[in-house]
Length: 115
Length: 112
Image (cartoon, rainbow over all chains, first blue to last red; front, side, top):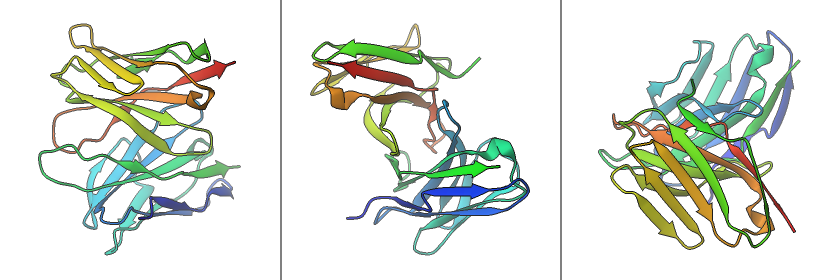
């Protein structure tokens, strides 16, 4: 059974550019959550996708958008990059069942640097 | 202030016990968690405790929850160099989505 994978591992962009980060969820998982982890901080929730629809969003502007595909893999898109977007972006997958705790399994992250 | 607060650093000697502390603000928190992050890796869930419990033990790990003081601690017995990592405390609130809110993390350094 493969765990959560993310690509690319590292990425350098310049201000104003757009970026797409990818995540393959763990086999059998139907929910993907994305987090931004700035240096020295804990992860901050960006949004969650369940069965291809956004299922919750944190305090991030609309230039952060996402997609989930029928195979439950996911993309995070960030438009008009700003210097403060430099961070480790973590993807986590889980199985959503109503009313009970669902452990999230994290990928290794994509390190984005904006110059 | 922050929803979840932790001290930033802890240094211990190999073989000693480590105690990492966390305070949270929301008394309605449902679950409280401890995650471990090693360099270059994602987060690994170590353990979690439901808010109606006050203690949970899992091998070398002991979690203590004081709901009155909104204080959570993680004790690692017989700390090893492989335990060196950043430890994050997190909470989830009622509502069904179980999205954790993380603290800033405590960097645990284990020296021989």
